[in-house]
Image (cartoon, rainbow, N blue to C red; front, side, top):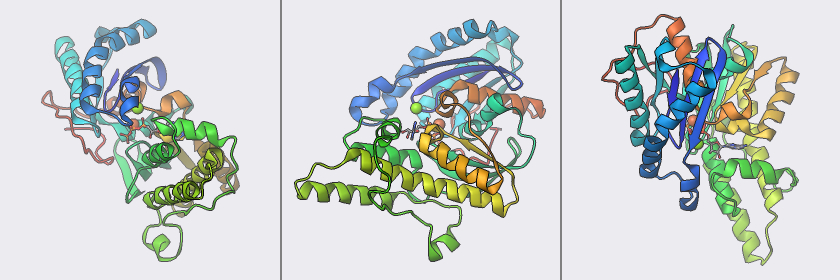
Length: 342
Ligand code: ATP
Ligand code: MG
Ligand code: FE
């Protein structure tokens, strides 16, 4: 069983190996929309209220109860400390009451591991492109539990953060990623040539697998301001499409480069931004050209959920690693290379 509470989603997943048995989810997003961002205290309180009903829902969906599970995994980081603590406390209580081993696992590695529920076990070395609200990283995955190497990451904003900030500039609601994805379908991506960060000259040499999206965000802001000053109504769909292409172009190009450089034949894409239609399209086209197989889970498993935590937990158990301590802390800045907490 896996429990997730790092941000606004309360999730409980139950798996048997790579088979998904329950995927119960509750979100407090509605309560954050009017603030234009997640309010940590509100999220923590919502987790408290949702935790028991979400557990019950997972039991009902799967016909499995906590007494029947082999182990309990919980996101111990990274994320909002107050939010993480609710999941960690719930997992500790269940582990103690039912005498089950407890594993504190990494949310980011879980975003990658979840694809196993969809497309079976990772059976060879892979590159993972992790694109979420708080992180944008390229990983070399020799083993999803014991062998993750960080190849590169964003030097400023995360990809999802860029989507959310640009959506705000365009007057679209929070969280902006899905809205940009939707409105961009009616836009022309060739309208505006937005910058592609860290893709040229010395930048590329020094930051081969790194990303930068803050310059892109500023370029969109400047474009919108300019249109305003000229008294024109700006073309939301065209700007959204041009911005989205810029992000997805760089993400997929660098991820494919990482595969080719490391002679890797599989690219896994995970995290909330992996739900993006244009990203999937770019990735499929470029991977096919390079002879690389891509693995992207269905949209409902890309954004935060408990199934991903259960999927990673199952791999930790399978490797026979020792359980985490019942004193397990919440670690808001847990690095992706620490997959299981001590
Ligand atoms: P992290 O996993 O880094 O801790 P998080 O859990 O907040 O951050 P996720 O839930 O993985 O992030 O992803 C949320 C992000 O994904 C948001 O920034 C959201 O805008 C973005 N997102 C969701 N759907 C789409 C989409 N279709 N296109 C682009 N971005 C999207
Ligand atoms: Mg969320
Ligand atoms: Fe996440």
